[in-house]
Amino acid sequence: ETGVTQSPTHLIKTRGQQVTLRCSSQSGHNTVSWYQQALGQGPQFIFQYYREEENGRGNFPPRFSGLQFPNYSSELNVNALELDDSALYLCASSLVDEAFFGQGTRLTVV
Amino acid sequence: AQSVSQHNHHVILSEAASLELGCNYSYGGTVNLFWYVQYPGQHLQLLLKYFSGDPLVKGIKGFEAEFIKSKFSFNLRKPSVQWSDTAEYFCAVRGDGNKLVFGAGTILRVKS
Image 1 (tube, chains in turn cyan, green):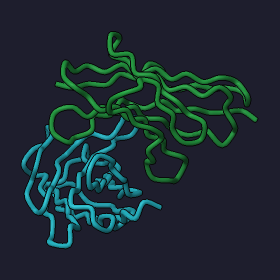
Image 2 (tube, chains in turn yellow, orange; image 1 turned 90 degrees about the horizontal axis):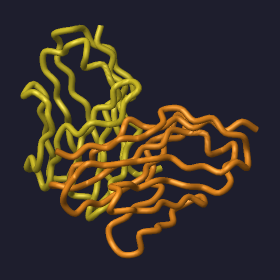
Image 3 (cartoon, chains in turn red, purple; image 1 turned 120 degrees about the vertical axis):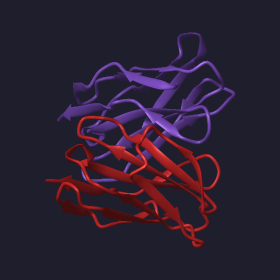
Image 4 (cartoon, rainbow over the protein chains, first blue to last red; image 1 turned 60 degrees about the vertical axis):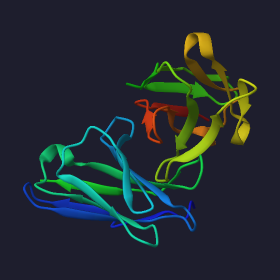
């Protein structure tokens, strides 16, 4: 176990809906990153939060947004869901140089 | 932009065979390199990492990797695989900022 927990573990949404995924980081870790892992691919960087500020963003549209809270937990929000958003969403927390990953949220958009 | 290429998507080996998984990256600056493993039903775990110094790094469970700067490579090796090594292996590079750029992964199946 890494100490990084994500909820929910599985989720089914309809195209056009909005979804919020949650991540509780490992104790003391002030940096949280989110990744999207489509089937058969490696994780792709969505964005990173450091002390409640976005600190880097990958090639994802603005309908992917996030938050980090004072306790360093984080949310990933996706608006106007599309079928291609179906994927495993991974959260990783870090303090210095090593990222610890949660088990992910499997999102299916129908 | 950084990119990572893993040479094989599927590898099947018998127990006790030697393993080498290829990884090449594209980035002109200083990089940090990682190998992660994902066992069935489990989260991504760090196998080993290279930041600087000795280019041959040793990780957990008998894995090692060699950084060859001139070849932009960071291949993963294990002298003798076990059935429990069946998993998906990801090579990743960190260059600009703190984001990790992952390869597409290699699925290793070890036959007992």
